[in-house]
Length: 212
Length: 156
Image 1 (tube, one colour):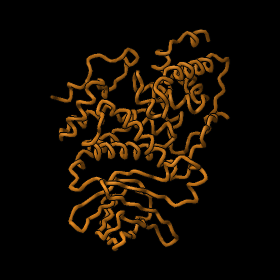
Image 2 (image 1 turned 30 degrees about the vertical axis):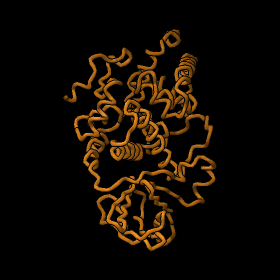
Image 3 (image 1 turned 90 degrees about the vertical axis):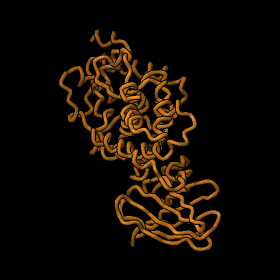
Image 4 (image 1 turned 120 degrees about the horizontal axis):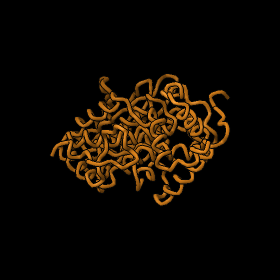
């Protein structure tokens, strides 16, 4: 079996136009996990390609900068390689990875003494110095800038959730694991957060947090 | 703008995906490093999983973190390895104990650095010097019967 056999023929509509090499069908994940556990490197590569976006997105959703986010990706895959032989439910590998990534991210955050206050619903302030800023992002179009500005005004919970739902698809088992939320509440929360985002966008003038 | 209100969830998410790309796209070198980890799967020792980390103990984490020492527990079968990160002005140390108590040879590995070695006494107690800065370490335990156990690599 080659790696390419794990690349789907069709992607969900939402992703059309995106170059996303890592798409793996749910049913193929368990198979790839089993093959990787048997020592098949291409299967491992497939998993890394498929899920690293999710892990990176989880890490940056805790406002970790690129260096720490890289550490979270490394730590999560290390945990995976250590446990390949003993993953009991390979079909839930994505959720397991998401939980592991959350733990790795929290561990780093707390090691750095910057714990998030529980229930933090505060406004997005300045990004951490070592995390990407809007200026780093090539936001050519005015509409993208406005979208970013609106997104930055969302509460932490919505920002984190939306950042994850753009990299995984329904039923969002990985998002539920990453946020430690029941899977049934992801869909409604997603809808609510998108409504908020839309309302911020339609407001006559979206205040730009970068200008204070 | 009228157009904004009309955007469907999917259309909005698709646009958002583009805007958030720096937060969702790991750099190529991060991916390459993750692929390379596969070489580590041939551990010649039994893995001791990380079963407790005081940093992830959610109770009063905010109050605790600064004041309390970091405590980690690793478990492999009946063997438990309990360690505490002891940070003093003189340097950082790992103070630990094997449960059940037993003598053993210990080896601390941090990256490519030369392993740091020490012995656990009859009560299973040991002390190991830690690298001065935060990093990922593994602790290998060579038991009296020759069996080897290695902890999950953990950032301390």
